[in-house]
Image (cartoon, rainbow, N blue to C red; front, side, top):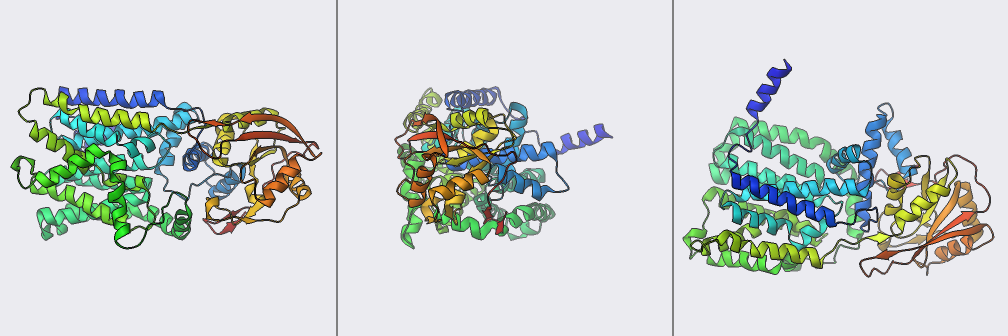
Length: 551
């Protein structure tokens, strides 16, 4: 029976490699080498700088720990307890698919930043291969490789593609969905349509804003095949399949939508763009920084020369999909108030394709044109790699390992500092002490704290003696404090006075360092509460605004 089922599945699945040539296999090998080289150059020792990256990494650890314990009778209680122990968990803030993928890599290689980055770059390779496979509809292997390198070597994409973020995994699913859907539109079997739907759903389960591609697919179909195609049984079945698969992620989104949007609007990376025309020109203005000036210039030249050079023209099916991809995607992201350059990554593929199509058609009679055309992509890739190294911040993992060695069993470690998510991830990934918990002192010192301090701080009125008592009451034998950080706030001054009182003794100072000139690079100081604390982790009352719940 199992053999029969396997044979049926193999018969249904399309043979992706059936038409692959020796040149195609060689190009995939080249892409593997590029991505492997990127991985070898990355800092991957737990010194995570970007706050969201450390939280994504922790979400994967949560999924792994959940699967290891399978608390099916009380899964919600398990999540609450996990958040009390590691209060940087954001599993409900984002869709879950990337966290599940991270858990798989953690299961194979252990919970560490190196494994998380390996997962991230596996998706970068998947994106590169998808861009190449899609480009082969129009280009020979050499120019198609150039498109792939322009895509993954774009400054913004290469920057975020080497950090533990959702954008590249979602984009990888999306570009393969485009490949499958184009095959279907060009007359291939319905199974390609189902694969396109599944990969689009996977993209949305990775990052919500990939949902715009559903509109691209919906518009392209009647434009190519007419309105009657909407009533084709395959279309109806795929639409029902997609709708059913989307129900869970839609429920997650709408449960958390109000809070997610409030947090996003408070994010320090969200620019205050003017309404109207200025809002819709924002992404056009930043596009050269996202893709590189040569890529954008050549793509614009392609559009200008298109009416005059017939060789540049694509057939109707291909043109409809690519134009719809850019136009609908741009309108979607332009209509969203919160704007950031990396949000536009999902619609960038047609521009590198246009750039390479122009060069390919112009150099059609030039000998060795494939090698000549690779000069631009390799130059853009190298420039992005050199000019935008991945930031890191040392000291956080080291401080986590030190306090883990010193702390008595079943107690807490208190932390005050900027990159609390990196410290908490360090406690889970590198301490080897699952009996220890972390107390975020910002939850004691401030109220209505969620994700971004830049949204405004509301201080609690606390004396140094009261802070010391609360640390003791929370069974935190050791406290890690970042010097200088928000030092002008009275409650932070009270914390500094508390740890410098006779109730604490200084244990060690750890210098922080970074490869960027960040304003928050200072020093981490470990203090020990003089009085021994009893065993048993105690968490402060914490408000989970995602669920409007106080633990």
